[in-house]
Image (spheres, rainbow, N blue to C red):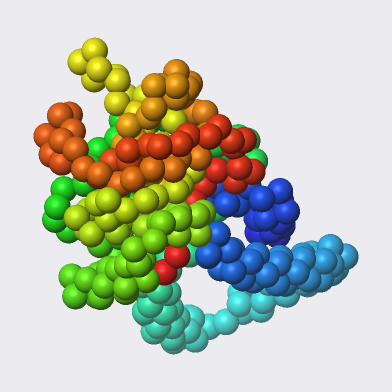
Length: 332
């Protein structure tokens, strides 16, 4: 029954996340087909467990118990009759029988020894606490998904965790994925040659001299391209949307326009965007205010990082409403 309840709970949770659209806050939307596939498989397993659960007939168990009790009574009667007959057996017969039983005991000891060895190699969960731990671990995703609320990220996350610029070298491992970055970095998912080929394709795709229009679909790949090859985009007009973040550094204010993005799942999510020189009239915009920025890509030295970073010299800033889905996702 526990297996059925856990599987049914998982199916209901996944259906809820997909129907409400909250699944987008956990995984890349391009991988939703995997979530759908897992839901279908879990539903099949749920029906299988339900079949075995319903198939169990408590009446049969009671009949087997009654038969066992009746057999025990017959065995007790037979034992008493055998005891009476054994009293008439001669001493020689008893000695022979004792010798035979000695051999049988040896065979039984050997059989029991083999049985003990088999038990030693049985890795099943026979103890109650083992089964409880296993079921709790299986039910943990359901508990977290049900009782922990899903919230959209905002500038309070940036203020709490900060943002960094990734080192100019390949890096792997979970610790790096927990850091907020300006630049989307997918190099950790490819070898060096494949990554360079990916970037070459993107350069060819966005290498025109016209206005660089960034959308929800291409946001992360364009940002990665700008940071990898900033000289190719200097002087190019750009249009993109995001929320305002004011970074206070040594009595100075640096302005950024960010989007929260997910590369594969929430584990490698981050805040990605560009530093922006806002017009005087736009510097009073509050954090989390969504804007549409139109300007020209330049470069400037950023003291906190001690390096030159691309920035947008904004020519026009328009306030807009926050989109329904505030996340952007990397497509491959």
